[in-house]
Image 1: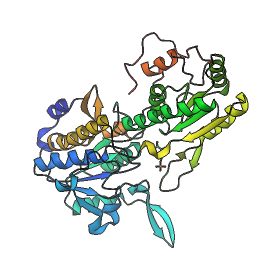
Image 2 (image 1 turned 90 degrees about the vertical axis):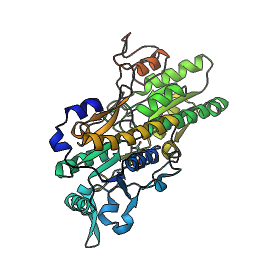
Image 3 (image 1 turned 180 degrees about the horizontal axis):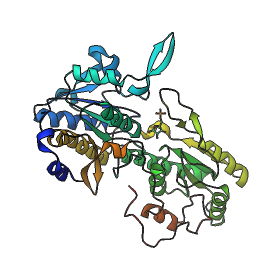
Image 4 (image 1 turned 180 degrees about the vertical axis):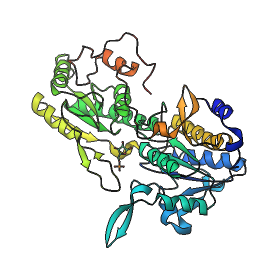
Amino acid sequence: MSLAKWIDDRDPPEQMSRPIRKIAVNTGGGDAPGLNAVLRAIALGAAERGIEVWGIRHGYRGLLEGGGEGLMRLDRRAVRGIMHVGGTILGTANRGDPFHYPVERDGKLIPEDRADELIERFHEHGFDALIAIGGDGSLRIANALAERGLPLIVGVPKTIDNDVYGTEITFGFDTAVSIATEAIDRLHTTAEAHERVMVVELMGRNAGWIALRAGIAGGGDVILIPEVPFSYEPIVEKIREREARGRRFSIVVVAEGATLRGGDVTIRDEGDAFRRVVVLGGVAERVAKELGERTGKETRSIVLGHLQRGGGPTTFDRLLALRFGAAAVRYLVEGCSSGMVALRNHSIDLVPLAEVAGRTKTVDLACDTVITAREMGICFGDEPSGRFACSPVVASSSDDA
Ligand code: F6P
């Protein structure tokens, strides 16, 4: 639904009854380039309307235990010169879920539900609305807070993984793809010089967006993504076929969430009672070792890791972040209903939070980017190279993100 339609359809007497005077904003989960640009657009959009904005430091921690230090006034001065800077001036948290908040009891940290307390503090500070900038986990928490009674929340989808449901793209993704593409470009020369197989592991959790995009743009020979469980035979065949053509090196791009057919994801950290998701990592090393044994070639693995998240945003991400931030304030002021801002058909839209919460967006294997890759002979580890696993002449979706 478009913003204009949403505003037209709203129930005026109820929804316009609470003017917005004071907004809280937080950034939660892994950082993504563009967070500061969102904060700047929120602060300026609010200032133009005479609305006060306060940032909660480190997810929800600043509201639950920060005292006076936990909140930061986001006025014009506070957001000067931050648009192009990576990270977040508010700080973020991976273990700050108010429904499973770490609390010390008898010298031990245990998870406790502090959502009611959080909502109480929110009212004590006189906030009218919350803008929650986060990925799938943070947006799920935002929806749960809305269900618990926090009156107005607008979510802003953020993640380099691009896996938030309901938006075609998240800010941070374009930057991550650009960095990963450059890294793959750089691997080519050293791979060729040593006639090696280089296996590069990219982030993305259980979605293959970064690996797919950077893999194609960077000229990867093999791309392994979570959406396509792989076998080693087609990869070995691809490497041999390249050898036969005199290309004595190969680049394998593997998403951290890729799995061997019938196998499981490779885990770096099991998570805990406060961060209840596993942290992925290590698949490149496994793949490199196996390919070395099977092909007899020298192999090396590298994990690009947090380089994909660090530093400033690309122009695309900067603009998207500014558009999301400005729309979040506009939406609160004019729409006065909870939801998530999203990019759909090139414009900013609104999506109900409940529609987004608990869902992720993965790569559609019939999209034109995947078809493009297959037509170029890139191996996904599921079919001998040169043959297509899916053969639609026309892509089922115009693009993948
Ligand atoms: O969600 C963003 C992300 O960078 C994922 O791609 C990755 O799996 C995860 O965060 C890494 O988390 P951490 O920063 O805690 O290592």
